[in-house]
Each structure stands twice: as structure tokens, then as C-alpha cells.
Image 1: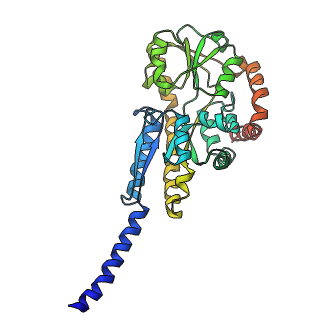
Image 2 (image 1 turned 60 degrees about the vertical axis):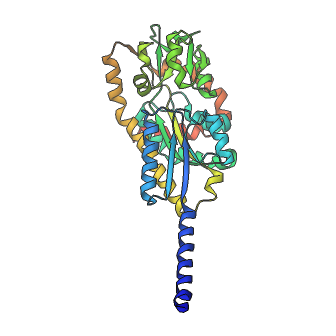
Image 3 (image 1 turned 30 degrees about the vertical axis):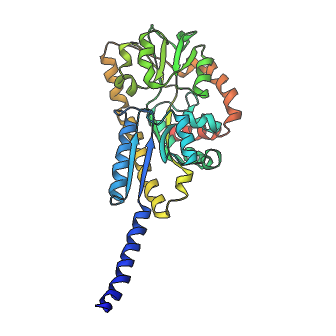
Length: 329
């Protein structure tokens, strides 16, 4: 009997150690983002969470917190820098406030349409910018997603961008977009996305800078039915992981998380790219007055914008060159 105990004890101890080593790798992660539940970013964040759980055989669980449940993007960045938040899908807007180089991705007419935007965000030139994040923000950049191309939606008739002169125009609160709208003479008014509908309804703003998808999902066209299709700017998003969290992950988990998240960021791009034309068609079928503008109508504003941002974002030249090359392929 004592002999059996002597044999069983090391076996049981070994099993216990093995179980502990396995559970030590298991993690419960939190992922924050500002978009509401129906938004493509939120949908793919949840799809990423589900796939990571499946690929890790249930060891890794990702809880997704949409709709600014964990605060605004600046607050989420701070949480990731301390390790209190593990992951996030962030607009490039927030990163450009901290790393001006990323402002180059918001250059007016850097790309002409959503297909060019998708190709540029998957290019080595754009992906190379992510290498600057650990040093400047303490975050690990995994890859890009995006929303649709930016358009102008107004309560009053709008034929050209100059018609927004003096008009309070809702923008995402960051400098590159602000500087563009200042350059065309508008009065850029930063507002969080959940506040936009009521702001249009009560006249707090006269117009908004928005993509087709959000205009439809959040029904902004009910409060402003004059749409200027300008495609003046793309709107990138980036998937990031806290550097403090990253350093404690095994090499295998880093690869698993990075590959799985990147695949869903690519799906965000693909989904927006695939639906853009259909969304435009749907908006045209509603009680919306649609006009189209051209790059030439804001050429002076583009020149003014680049005088400010070319020194801040030296990658602008390389991005424009890559975009031009992709345009000819």
C-alpha cells in the first residue's frame, strides 16, 4: 500500500503541475471600442473574441466592451498603458493626437475611393507606421481596419464644400480633420458619435463629417437630408494590444492573438469595401438630396492642410507615392 502511495504521489503531483502550467497561460482579456453594437467594428471584435476562444481551446476569453463602456479613446489608451485594459480597436484619430505621424493617413484626397483606401491600409508603407507605436504609446499595433470614406451631410442644401463656410460641422475630435474643415471655412465642432443625432436635431451642429454606414445605421439622414458625396478622406482604425500585457504573453500566444486579430481587421476593411456602393445606392433611394463634389473644389484647402501636416508627418510623401502606385495597378 505504501508502495502504491509512493508511485501515485509523483504522478498526481506531475498532473497538478501540468494543470497549473496550462491554466497559467489561460487569460481573460478585455477589448474596448467606441462603436455601438450594430457597427462592423464591434461585430468583428466579437468575431475575433469567438475565434480566439475556439483556437485556444477555451483557454482565452475576450470580453468586448462597445459604445464607450470603458471610456473614450483617450481613457482607453491610458488604461492600456497601465495594463488595466488589454486590447482595443481605436480610430487613428486618437493615435494621431499622440503620434502626429499617423495624421498622414487622414490627408485630404490621399486616396480617391474606398478600393484605394483598402489597398493602401494593407500596404507595407502604411503597416510600417505601426512599428512606431511601442516606443511612443506603449501599444502593440496589430493592423488596420477602417470605416467608409468620409462624406458631408448637412441640414441645409450643400452643393460644394464651400457651402459649409461658417457652418458648425461635427467632426471626430482630432487635429487633421479639424485643420481640413478650418481650411474650407467651416466651424469644426468635435462631438462623440452618440451625441450626433440629438445635436443635429436641436441645431447644435449644422452638418456632420460621416461615412455612409453610420449615416444609415444611426439614421442621421432623418435630421439632415442634404448629402455631399466628396470621398475627401478615409477613416482608418487600428487594432492594438497593451504593451504591458504583450510582454507577459508566450510567443505562441502572441502569434495566435496577432494572426487572429489581424484576420478580423482585414475583414473590417473587406466588409466596408464590399458594401460601400450598396450603401450609397440605398441613401440615394431615401428622401435625401445627393450632390457630388470633386477634389478640385478644395485644392486650396489641401495645399493649406499639407503646409501644416507635411512637417509633422514625414511619411505623407511615401503614402502619397504608394497610393499613386496602387492607383495605376
